Length: 375
Image 1 (cartoon, rainbow, N blue to C red):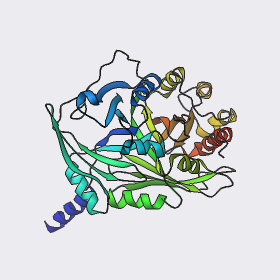
Image 2: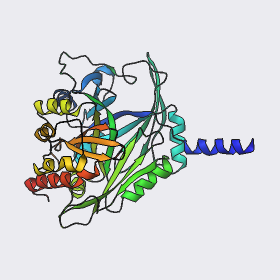
Image 3: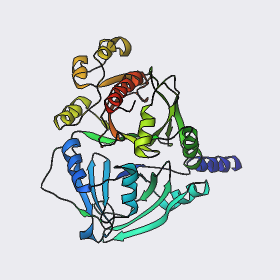
Image 4: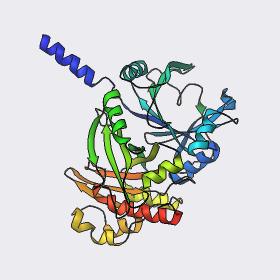
């Protein structure tokens, strides 16, 4: 009996932060109304909820969009001199909040605080006629924060004090399903600090590590470690620069973003060819790899279901691991600053992150850096 009780205590400690999935991603942007139109038109996100002057807010306005299980909040300040405005001034448009869906936001907060997390805000109950939500928050790298969201007693459209947003404009979805992973860029020698943060404070495990031999070209290099929670629904690769002949993409990001932050959101689809076809039709621009990549693809990857010619026309990359293969493609930066971008990914058994594509991908990024004069 004592042995079983001890095992239960160990299991409970290992699972001290159970996470059901990503609840939402909140971006601070200069003009949320225009940004909402862009995400609808270009990426096929659907209108969900709104909060602002009409709902009683006086300092900000927010539009919520969704597609599959993905929810984005786009938030802008309504006055000068606000914390939101200062964030935008320093970083440009970018991710402020990575919100995590939990069963108990109080417990998630106090467990992480007890292990050394810095508080963003204490557990807070938010209520309206549709029920209540409990939220709490902690800081992570840069000015990014994690918000724990407990919503099992809420029946409203999104969160208390948001109302349904039902515009007449309804572009079709493009097949995006859920967030596969979220990549953070941190400064020199910062990767292990934040790997330790996710391990010690949030109970994550390291899935894989890439050093500068894995992720390098003739000119630039970086290092990366991937952290994941217990059920594998949350995956956070953490990148840091490595020494190279020229300025790496991570260094470029850190300079223009003004510090550490979310580099890209990887969003999953069940049909990447259809999704990317629609995105291209909507004006989304993607990085391009040379034709030689596809000439060597079948030899490197083996048999796949897709036609290589079609993948070549769309610029979709392929990689294989022991479990299967994946298809992926990366947009160009979606902001004026060369910071945030999206990855579109389809997994056909593969659990990895496209290691075999790193060289071609980073050479494509370097070509864009040359055009920007930042390499």
